[in-house]
Length: 151
Image (tube, rainbow, N blue to C red; front, side, top):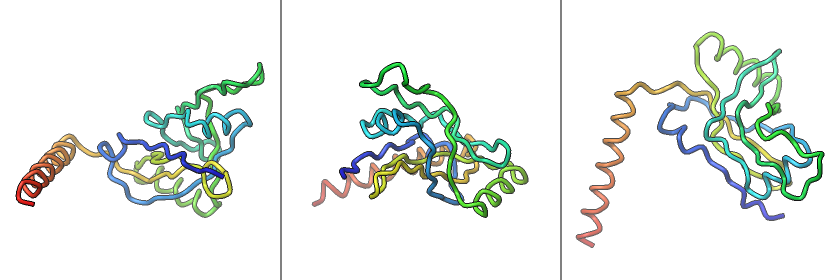
């Protein structure tokens, strides 16, 4: 099976500092997985939160499947994430006690054809941290240009 689907959240690296990464399964409807396999999903504005000791991804946009009938799914619905019980307890404890957040980083299809979501326990960056990130990125570009001239 072709698994070239790799949808990334590019804003996350700029806005958050990652602490722990997990790979979670997603509970999807039939038309949702078909739309994801077409690459019609967006996780840029999404986040995760707990509801009754279960983890849900909020604001993940999966477009409606083009070949579906009136049984199509809601594009912005909450989707349950599937993790082991001990991982859920650890994440819930960290979120409630430390004030950290859970951010989706990457949506992909694994070797078995299942949709997986890579999530991270993250801490929001301050404005000066973001400026530091921009400065580092620009200095790296400058060095790469200089090195390219002398090769």
